[in-house]
Length: 371
Image 1 (cartoon, rainbow, N blue to C red):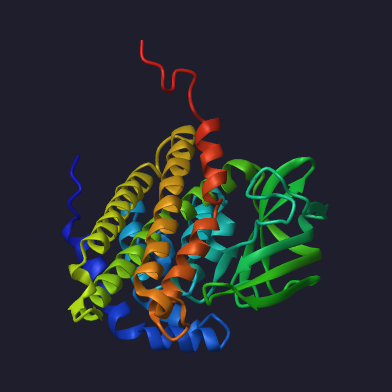
Image 2: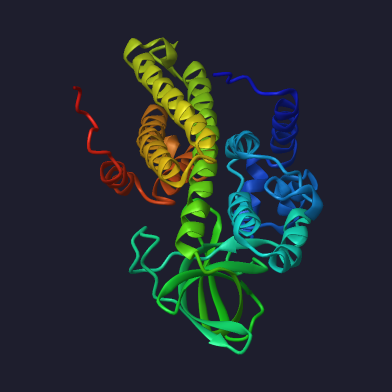
């Protein structure tokens, strides 16, 4: 199997890396957090690079690219711990492209691709605990359309988005809808998240909605898997940056007159961090390459990848803080932000324990048995 990136993929990676290095430094990130955790200006800059249209067809103004290109982009955004929710754009554009009818695509995809419309997935509910088949939001037919009632929690940039993709129960079956943030009966309560980003609780009370698909479970699982693959790549970028900062610190921090990088015990810990990073990188590749597989194979792959990424994120983040000492948990120093970002990514789209359960549940009868 060829793991070399094409020239176009390398150019895309270099363009995003250049933007992160020159346009999204640590100080800008801290300023965005201080201003509320989301910058429409920064998101528009991503859209100008074409990144909002990665999963949108050329006919709708997008780049018509695939999972590998998305992985390349998200890994570079992870290096800068970019707060703006491009992964949500990938999820929603992917779902609308795959499951929406012509009218829904025409209404939303061009705006998503241009960056004019930020659409995010609003699916989490308090009772669900990572389960996509648990949904208390109800959809009611209203003439030729629908209305939705319910509450969704921890919606990324929920009070800044232009619309939401919302799962709801319609006639006893899970369906997916688009709800505009300015719709009647819609209310949001925004707040900062642990990693410095922004989220909101979204309440719908007979809010008008547009149907995407009545096969909501299939579409939602597909969207979640797009999100997991994007998260895996983003986490690799964060861990890569965390390790590089840690190594640089160890080469400059002195103890007993010598750099602590010369201490064998600490070098072993860095080697273990590198091992976990490379395990995570390989599973990120695996997740992206399996994103277009059959549903069962794809779901198994995402659970395996997210489990390994969760294990690696915890290890790399915790070791980085330990190797830095007290400075590693100060708000002024970047490693504390790396640690918080990795911690939040570990619980997004299902934490490590949940994914271990998914791996176990999806094992075939012959798993681990050798004839």
